Length: 71
Image 1 (tube, rainbow, N blue to C red):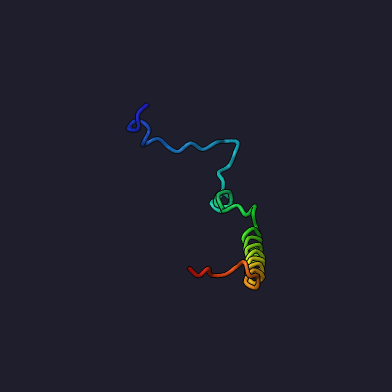
Image 2 (cartoon, rainbow, N blue to C red):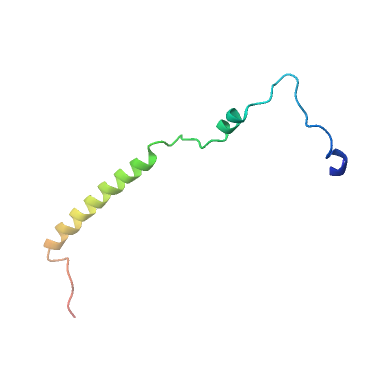
């Protein structure tokens, strides 16, 4: 069957299942928030990691093995 043959046919309406409302249909395609809280957990972990790395750098700056080597 070609497109020209079906273009003017009425849209199929099932008899057992009523057409879904626009609101219900939109709800099916709304963003799924399975990972709610994920972004804040990542920010929290990044902040902890940054603080730990600062402490390591500060501790190593006091150590003689860390520093600028003069040539």
